[in-house]
Image 1 (spheres, one colour):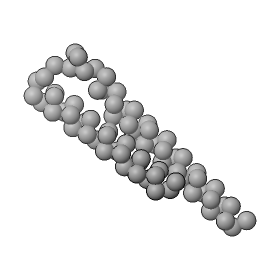
Image 2 (cartoon, helix red, strand yellow):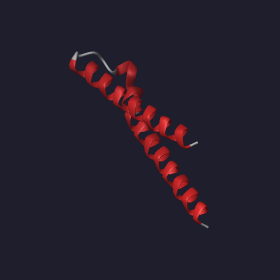
Image 3 (cartoon, helix red, strand yellow):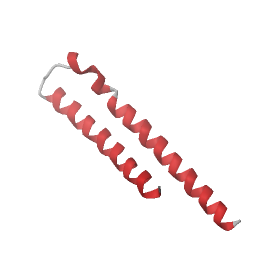
Length: 70
């Protein structure tokens, strides 16, 4: 489970950075955003998912460490 959580954290970071790069590419090249307004929310969603996934993993690691020492 620990490996899965770390992999998912990396996936969310890659998705967030990739979507920011895509937004900047469209903005620099003057392409319209009218049909792709949802793309602006993607970095925020990815950042939130990364934060929640990381928080969940840290809590699990802390609880596992606490249970091993009891």
